[in-house]
Image (cartoon, rainbow, N blue to C red; front, side):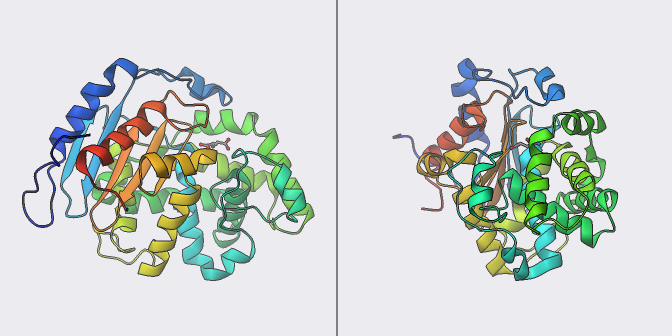
Length: 322
Ligand code: GLU
């Protein structure tokens, strides 16, 4: 694109409002194109023609457009927060139970698990997230403890505005009723000794983590610690050390957007994690957290308008990690 980069108000802060408005206007004709996830019955009821986007500077400045304050099901974006929390508890020993390579197979695939002895390729496919959830279940005294711990954690990452974040019980139950494939994976990993807790408890906690509802501003804010070398900008606390923040970003880039992570990195150039609720959270290191939401998905499982919005964002601003 040939447009000028957005103006920078001072050395540390960009003004992204015009950019977000341009993106929203340009994408309006195709918002709703694609398919809302329907394999979880409660998600099938979400109207596809919605779109919100927010950029949260680590100094607290908020830019937003469209439905940025409307909460939606974060689904697989919860895997990013669950991994961070489990890493706080387990440290590097976590990597003995889950890998960090892109899987090259769909997020809910069983095929690799047998060949690789029950060690999932990475923490952002379902099998990996189930192992991570198993760790949280062990550290928090069971499935309900793991659920509460993750909810409290995302609330703390989202700062003072995050206190109203909730789990949607209806979505959680709907997912549990249709979780045969996830349960199969969990049982399979248990047969290899890589799942320690009760399968039912792990599935319960995992499905309720996916059913957390947040809006774009809350999610962009909650991701800012990754852009801020692991420090929660709202509390000043170190969530993870700078090297682990780098590693989280690397995993987002290589494994965060399903089987399309290579194409997403090519088009967008930012570490990101998507979910089948239509949300995508991304970070620009040292600067900001970004979240876009639009429920209609591409074949890959990533939000169609969301992916295009992030692609436009890095093209218009000329800012990415590359
Ligand atoms: N709860 C969903 C599942 O386990 C998460 C899918 C996703 O967002 O990738 O199928």
